[in-house]
Amino acid sequence: MSSKLTDKYSAGKQGLGYIYQARLALLHLLQAPESTTVFLEKDDDLDFVHDGGGKSLASLKHKAAGDKLTDLSTDFWKSVRIWLARYKRDGRAASNLRFFLFTTGMVSGDSFLARLLPDQPVAFGDTVPLIESAGAALAKSKSALIGSIAPEFNELSDIEKQDFFERILILDGSPRISDIPAIIRDKHMRSIRREHREFVLERLEGWWNDAVIKQLTGARMEGIFGYEVSDKLSNIAEEYKADSLPITFRGKVPGGEIDTDTDRRLFVAQLREIGISASRIRNAIMDYYRAFEQRSAWARENLLVSGEVEEYEDRLADEWNRYKDVAFEKLKHDSAEGALRDAGTALYNWAEFETGKIDSLRIRARVTEPYVLRGSFHILADTTPEPRIYWHPRFMDRLSHVLGVEVAA
Image 1 (cartoon, rainbow, N blue to C red):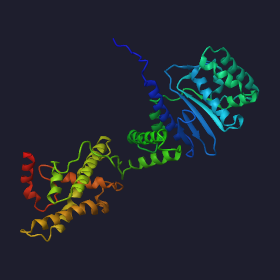
Image 2 (tube, rainbow, N blue to C red; image 1 turned 90 degrees about the vertical axis):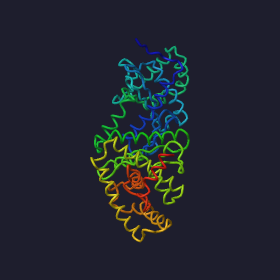
Image 3 (cartoon, rainbow, N blue to C red; image 1 turned 180 degrees about the vertical axis):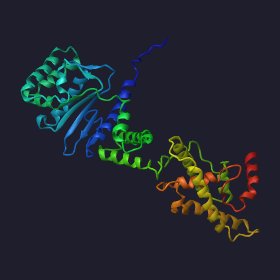
Image 4 (cartoon, rainbow, N blue to C red; image 1 turned 30 degrees about the vertical axis):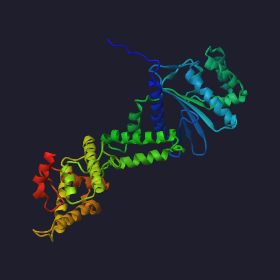
């Protein structure tokens, strides 16, 4: 028998709240006009700045299932305290503020807060009872927190109280944190094939979380615009079309130290054989790593057609073979080692710098990322028991010696 223990020092709920802020902000920015800007943890949990200068402050409450919002709910009155301070700061009735409370709970049917739900506008003649209900709730509460709000609220005139409450909207039954991804996929990714939506969302959230972190740490001072989200979603979706593939390993580096002198892989040994510098070998190792991991990612996401990689490698090997014949054409049986290395270097330079200009050597038409092509040549140079391509003209003759040295090392 197991029991669920609650640690009074646990920050789980607080952590969940922060993640909820980011996810709900993304969802509502997708739903808002693209000119809308969002700030997190500025004047409230979320600040939405609209085209024209209007601002909406949003408090977020991720509650337990079945939670109810009543007249004396501290969730509501804590938000009121924040909103009152902003309302007074910005000129009271002259301010351009609106206030939203997003809660996963539900407003109790017998609470005066039900009048602040959507589609229940407060008519001018009914505002006094609403204000009186709010005042009565403040007066009867025994909570020190709620009681401390009464003096601040009563600093407003009746007209200002009316104006203040007319700016509040409670959105109960808001989506829970675990529901938001499905809402985004189903309502905002309809132009993307269903089997790709999960991966597109994963990348969008990765970019979004990075933007949020930059804002919260002060690395980004401006808000995040709706059009930025639209542009990023569009760019990611483009990579999942039939003539493209997503590029997700740009700038990634392998774990551990890169040692070009002791790396025992065959493609590295090939580069040492033609005298390639350590810095260029390091670049080759990076290209190999990124291409290999990228292919693995494509395979995990089922983005590759059966036999597509094999057909791609055949194209690369065929093109390499044609240029090899040109690069080695003037070599003789007794050519000096320097001439052999020069020919091998010329062949390698062609593969590294010239093949990217050949459209037919792309795995798909719009996949132009250099590491995909360069790394694929290194993968071919690393195949066993024999590499499918090589750079040094005599490398295949020396292969057994090279492998022997490697095994003995």
